[in-house]
Image (tube, rainbow, N blue to C red; front, side):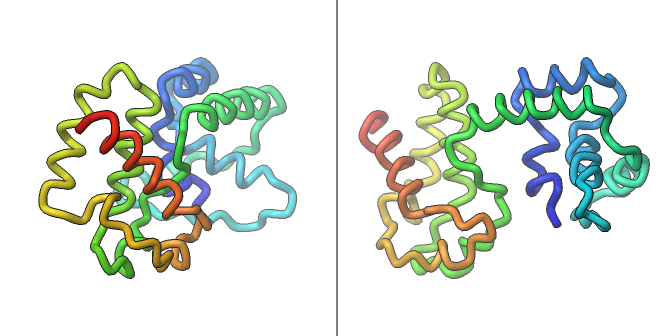
Length: 174
């Protein structure tokens, strides 16, 4: 289930994306995630959510196992990806529906990841954060009930990450 990690593996950071592009300029980044999952010996079926006919056709076209070389490049790209993501949220939104404060958690995590990947662009990101929090429902509104954590398929420590977001933006960019 979810081999493309909620779409996160379909839009890699630039350095990781370039590695895969060198392997095959015509292959999508998502196709490598699907091929990786299919290459695991214990996997018989790979299920992936798709939003467009183009994504469906791409997923159906990538049915060959990875070569050892492709696998080594994927592990290198995975390392780059892992080092560039502060919060490994897939953006599924399951955490939002139970939040009594209506905090749109994935949006704040997306913004925080963007900030951590490009700290020099904080001046661009801060106004977006301020607009998002202007009408309430921001990380500072979190009451620590952890209902969000109970519904997160990634089992992320969401309240801790919301605190990190609040610290990064409220304390430094107010």
